[in-house]
Length: 124
Image (cartoon, rainbow, N blue to C red; front, top):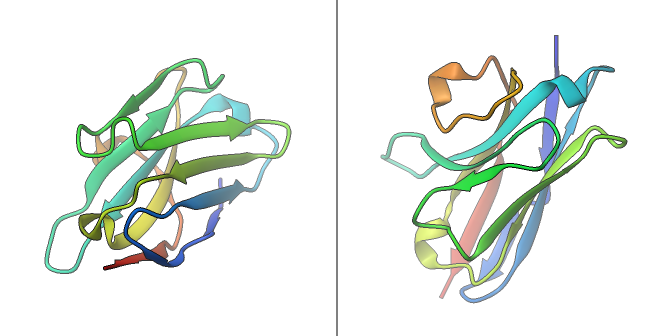
């Protein structure tokens, strides 16, 4: 069982930056692939970024490529999402997710554990 708690969301102006954190419980964090997803009002949840157990492999949605960076610190049981050059359309609730896997995934249905979400609002 893994419990995930996101933090770091907030209100930021367009062009600004935020760093989201997701702290995981348990002693087997390094066994899990991690992902970030987001859901804007009236829209379906969408993939943002994923990282494999070691941090050696990352993948991004085209909409955030070059602006967002996913990373992890297995010693701290934490995964991060650094968001730079934020746009109005990045406004959403951001969720981290975990799946016990040596790989990675951009598919929400593959993930077994989810955090409660953190709101990111980008203003003009």
